[in-house]
Amino acid sequence: MDASEFKEYIFGMLFLKRCSDVFEEARLNVIEKRIAAGASRKQAEKDAENKVWYGRSGTFWVPKQARFQYLMDEAHENIGDMLNKALAGIEAENIALEGVLDHIDFTRKVGQSKISDQKLRQLINHFGEIRLRNTDFEFPDLLGAAYEYLIGEFADSAGKKGGEFYTPRSIVRMMVRLLKPTLEHDIYDPCCGSGGMLIAAKDYIDENGQDGRKANLFGQEYSGTVWSIAKMNMLLHGMSSADLRNEDTLGEPQHVENGELRRFDRILTNPPFSLNWGSKDKDRSGEYTWQPKFRERFFHEVPLGSKKADLMFLQHMLHVTHDGGMIATVMPHGVLFRGGDEAKIRQQLIKNDQIEAVIGLGPQLFYGTGIPACVVVLRQRIHQGASLVSGKPAERQGKVLFINADREYLEGRAQNHLMPEHIEKIVTTFEEYRVIPGFSAIVDLETLKENDWNLNIRRYADNAPSPEPHDVRAHLIGGIPKSEVEAKAELFKSHGLNPMDLLTPRDDRYLDFAARITARADIKPAIEINASLVVRETEIRDAFNRWWADHTDDITALAGDESAASLIKLRDELLSSFSTTLESLAILDRFTVRGIIAQFWNQSRL
Image 1 (cartoon, rainbow, N blue to C red):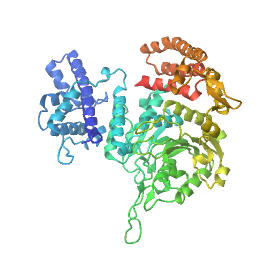
Image 2 (image 1 turned 135 degrees about the vertical axis):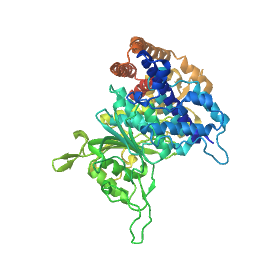
Image 3 (image 1 turned 60 degrees about the horizontal axis):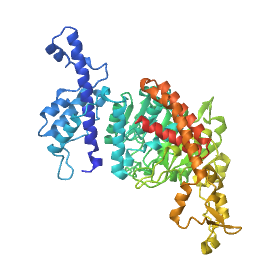
Image 4 (image 1 turned 30 degrees about the horizontal axis):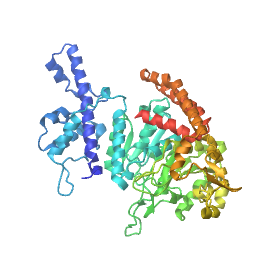
């Protein structure tokens, strides 16, 4: 059994231990209250077995066979059966857990074997060493963060299958920042996987001064196993009110009110790429045997027969979005230029002025696929009398922003990574709706029409690097072309380095290294001891030290202040002052500088 198959047992054991520890803490509190009210300890312990004491506190009722101390004392043989009964007992006693735990089977065989009693006992002993009450954590959401970390690790080990339930958190954070959800929004993920998009929306709300636990979160997931992981994820993050459903979103959407699909204000999702959806089977009369519910969602046509589902998901999202609501969805690049029905759907979206931005991402950022993807940002139209008009801000109407970020990533061995500085560049460009040559372009709808409604990003924002200069004479007889050195003048200047400290003229067009540099190994030491560069490095180091000294007391003061307002005020001040300090030195661009503080902030949260 590999790690990805083992995940449900780890998640099940973690959830069981958490429920048991929280219940035990509540049970002891009930006993103390009953004793204080005059009951004997024996009577108080008996009273504490009444479920009536626990409903209002939000504590799950844990029957005796599911309490972890009971398992520690009694589970020595047939342990898989005992663990199954423990999970079944908790689920049976708590309606909020209906269907969440019944898929976990500690006696399940993989091939010819199942997990031995010895290994299950080791697992029980390991979890028995750790108490999982809120009072045991350094910060309240520690267990939720640990659960998210485990999901990421299992996704990494699962390879291609990991992408079915987990989107890398850096991409999720970027998408959430594009949409800026608040407590006033109903937030929805129609392909919610393990719930990461919704958790990130909750975190964003927390970070911006509101209580994310009160967020209105909704999701749907086709896989029962993944849905249960998402439900546990929500519960471990304190999100017991999150409304997650288990069914096929395209075939049977579940969020229905008064016979109509519910509408949402913010939709974040990463649907499965190019899923072959539907069935070609027909009955004797020639009618398709399978048809989706709520066919009015599909404004182009009802997708009967086998279809690629990408733009079916997109049509569903638009149908369930409130006037002026926003969508950020991951999509394969094919939806931007494929022909046939997809071209007709794309044309309608552009004519309706519903596409706000198309953001191309780099390769190998997602688990299990090296295919580059994009994020499409859409904004729903609004009703104006009897008409529907663009829901975009006035200055964005009739235009689409293209961002070509396919070179914005940190290369890794098996997978590449979107770093904070890349997120800052993408988000800032979207927020400012700005043109950056070779990175972003704003294209009007008339131009898109002239290009047959093609949204291929490179057609509008081409970031292909300039060809590498090749000086044939330098290749043949040596020398460094002056033109190549002059082209890097700004880079040398920002580091305080005069290249002529290391070079000497050969003739009018070419340079040589100074006499003291006779081998490649001599170059690095010569740069490191260069007086001007040392002065520049000292300036940078002193500027950072001054910045740190100016803010150390403010950071330390947070230890006694848990208010969100103070945290947000400090974050904004750190970002602003750090950017001002380092950007003025002109050695790093604004996005790299902001990425540094963003990475520091994200790491400090863990």
